Every structure is written in structure tokens, then in C-alpha cells.
Length: 228
Image (tube, rainbow, N blue to C red):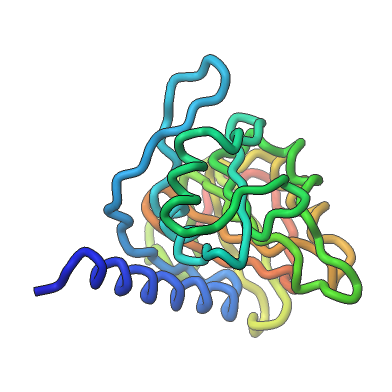
């Protein structure tokens, strides 16, 4: 009979492999497994307590250990180290919380954090691999031509064209729940390769798309109707 530890090992292994595949094949839509653990909500100022995207949280936790550090932002603010969510994440992983400019991993709980993105570490010319990896929570993700067959995509999505290593020609994705200001802030943090942050976009259903800093991203206007 499988124990809780066995299931945790299985979850971490499965999730880690999917995250590797996302980075090796930019733009590919992968479905993350359900993160069934119970975790505390976060609260910013006078906002009501909220739960962060559990798929994104679980994926981030699978990468954390005592060798790396992390931080979390939501509603345009960095969560304090003493917040229940930050303390719980640190306890579960033995990973330390730190200032944004030193964090190896960052979780953005929503798209209201555009002004915070510039604080992330983009690496150095001698050690570009030490740049931050950010998990960005969005409402919905679609890989055009692959994720949804036939039918049409709801209006209001942000359509992105991807190219670069790991992509034969180009990939098209559409996402909802990412403001243009957040998009431009993320793009600014990816200029000047080999410097720049790596990204994981994670939606509310567990859909995940990886965007390493080698991937070139261009934006179309918000689409009114896109055929999948």
C-alpha cells in the first residue's frame, strides 16, 4: 500500500519531468498533475485571503530544496517572509525565502505584479544560468492547433508567437489573465540573451507552457476570435 511519502515522491518525479519537457519543447502544452496537499492562503493588506494556483504552487515546490531560494508576489506586492504561505513552503522544502533580486525561483500569483518583475535576477555574462525562474499564474492557456481541436477560442485572449531553439518553425499560444503591462515587464526581463529570466505559465486547470530565455516571443493584438 502506497504511503503519503510514496505519493509525494511520485508527484515530484512526474511534475519535474513535465517541467523539463516544457523547457525542452517551448510552447508545448503539458498538463500538470493535481497537487492534493493542503496549504495556507495568502493575504495582501486588506484583501480577503486567497489561495494561490495549486498547480503552480505544487510545480514550484517540486523544484525547491535547501540549495535554492524563493519568493512569492501577489496583488503587486511581495509576500513577507513571515506570512503563513511563505513559512509553509519553506518548512515543506527546506528552501529559504529571500529578497527578489536573490531568489532562484519566483511565483507570481496574478498579473498585477508588473512593477515587481524588474527586481528579478537576470544572471550575469559569466553565469547566465543563475538567473531567476518565474512561475506566472494565468487564467487559461491554449496551444493553437494542438490543445483544442476544431471549435473556436473565446475572445479576449493574448496571442503570442514563439520561435527559437526547440521550435521547428513557430508555435502559437493564446492566454487569458495576463495583462499587457505584465507581458511587457516579463519581456523586458528577457532582453539581452544570454541574460534573462526563464518562465513557466500555469493556468487554473493545470496547463503549463515553458518559455526559456532562448525563446523569442512576439505578441499579436488581443484576439476577438481565434480558430484552434
